Length: 88
Image 1 (spheres, rainbow, N blue to C red):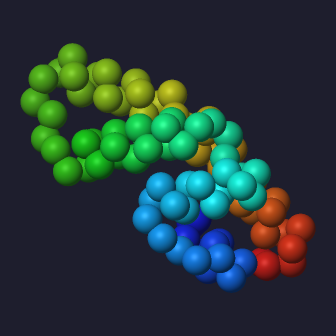
Image 2: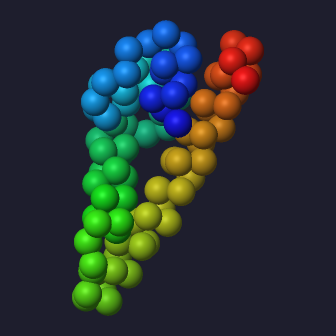
């Protein structure tokens, strides 16, 4: 979602870290870039690894659940930002 919004705004699309920096400057991030990078790493871990240890899997799922409000706030901020600029 972020690369598409940046592209629509005429902003350069770069690495995840660069895009997060731009989103922070636009006021779209609720949380630090580190929080976002941790969520991205967790997503990659959940998607690309087979976690066999039930305790580790439970911890990873708990961390993912805790990130949901941050993700929902981001989507809401992007939608509001785009609507305010009539980008929808």
